[in-house]
Image 1 (spheres, rainbow, N blue to C red):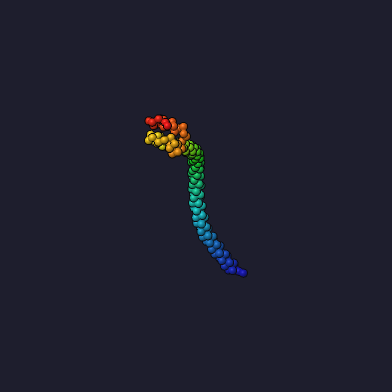
Image 2 (tube, rainbow, N blue to C red):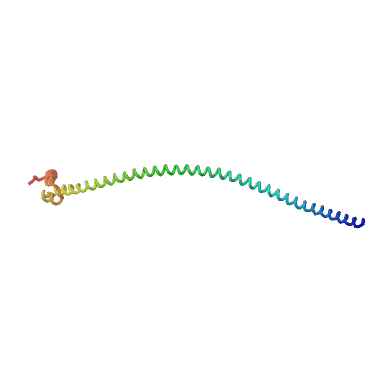
Length: 155
């Protein structure tokens, strides 16, 4: 092999080296662009992550405030409920007492009806027996009513 063959091989090797250098340069430029793009994407994602962490902290603070407010409202509601239960019991007691009073008044009024009727009959001059039968009152009470409300003497 001669020098010529060696020169051709050297030239070919040199060309091949030049092509490799150019390819390496092109590939490195391409990778630099990708690395730059990835770097800016990474920075953007870091900003997004930081913003999200900030929002999470703010939301946590708001949730805590809402929980405290909810606890206060819940406590107030329990107190109001207890007060209302107490008032309901008091009102039920009042209603029961009023019902007892009404029942008593109705019972008393029932007796008063008989006495009112007896007084009217006595004023009209009815006899003791008529009033006893009509009003279902004792004989002695009818005698007393007649003595008070009639002008005529007892017979």
